[in-house]
Length: 364
Image 1: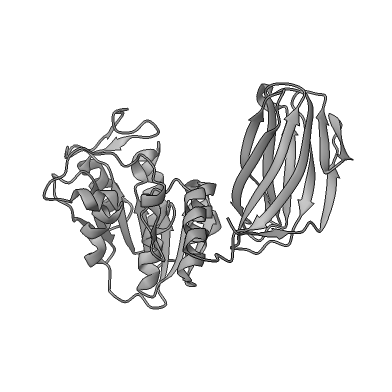
Image 2: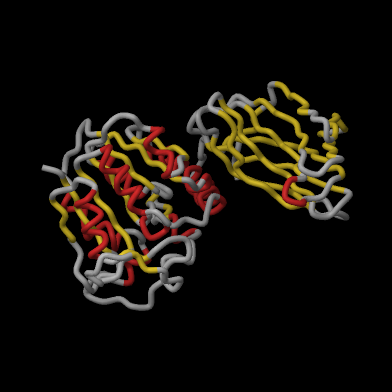
């Protein structure tokens, strides 16, 4: 992999009462003596807003069950992007891709003893931060695309297809019928996109679009190709990393990706959108009606896609065979919730036999 090392600007030792931090040869030693405490070191690098970076380091510890957290700090606060449990008697090499989020300059490496993780010491050596761009050739692109996987969406990145390189096991299906082909399913989410793309105007020049739960950006990119200014949001940090990588490779300027929890989107975005996509999300929620209402507050035109029961009764079903982090809605419940939220025109545009339900919702 060809990558350019980024040089450290400064470091700040984040000592707290529960321990201490000190410089050692080629790195830092972090000690935490008290439960429910943390210590760390803050490292400053010249990171760009949408850049994709790769951090590598060697970690060792004197105790098992030691927790290392990687945190990005920016003017809006902190985001814990990942954590690793480190065990003793060996050096563990950590490698992790990241994007800066709101133009962060600081990476904090912290040892934490919250939630019962071990006290003691962590030694961090040979820290290297590198930029994944520029991509030098097709072999380099293939390697970096695979490194950033797994990919839930099939994107064509200058000839490298993301799910062909490193796909997730999801979605899963053993049934292919008149609704979609096996290839459509492999090229996820083409099988869903084909069911509603013709309900969207061919030209969306200067229109503002919000793509909720955007994953790595398939739908955001499709609408940006039609001229829309797209904001894609997701609460998965790694999906936003993948989306920003794809944006850079595809050289698409009129799309922005941001990590955001769906419960916070009304605080995050005060302006109206010409269209909102809410795809593959409702059945992952314990309060889908709240999200539908919040979408209605921000737009007059929304497209919702979800797993749903063909039952026309108005209810939410607790069914772990379909979803373990939310309710399975019925078609009747969804239609009622859309109308109640203020959408006067609600059209189910997929057939009853199709595994997913797509609704096009508009206001007069």
